[in-house]
Amino acid sequence: MRIKPIRFGLVFILFWFGGCASTELPEEHHDHFVFPEYRVYIEEPTGKALKAPYKVLGWVRSKESFPTMEQAVVNSESLCKNYYNKAARQLLKEAEKVKADAVIKVRSIVFMMDGTTTEYPTPECSDDGAEGEILLRGIAIQFLPTPSPSPSPKPTP
Image (cartoon, rainbow, N blue to C red; front, side, top):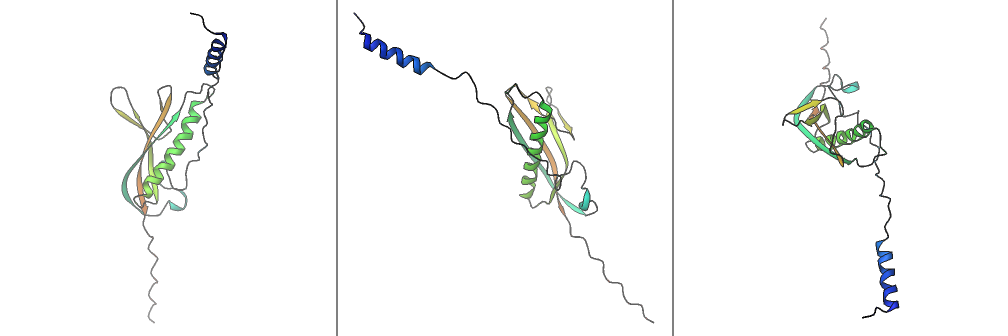
């Protein structure tokens, strides 16, 4: 049985164009996130909120995952810090769902191989080689209204 040259040529062209693929993979893109320091505090409130009384509403948690397969990213600490900032923003959104004004005592949570967890006040991420992850938790608070000073009674002569 003889293959006709035209059919052979069409099959060859089909396989040629069907098998062509780019050797370049798409680059990872990481948006830049800023820590919401005006409403999220690593420890206690600072600035104008320093002396304001507050009520604790409860724990809030957030988790952010990010791609880490890009080998050109040599500074994984800055990538971790960037997604720490994003997770802190997510903490604030979760706190706002329960009518909180701020989040205090923010901690990175890391699960250890032996099943225990460790808390850090600094950005600490886990990375499995393809995806990084950061877990945060904090305490949602609501600022109480400050009582206005009552006028002092007039002295009687």
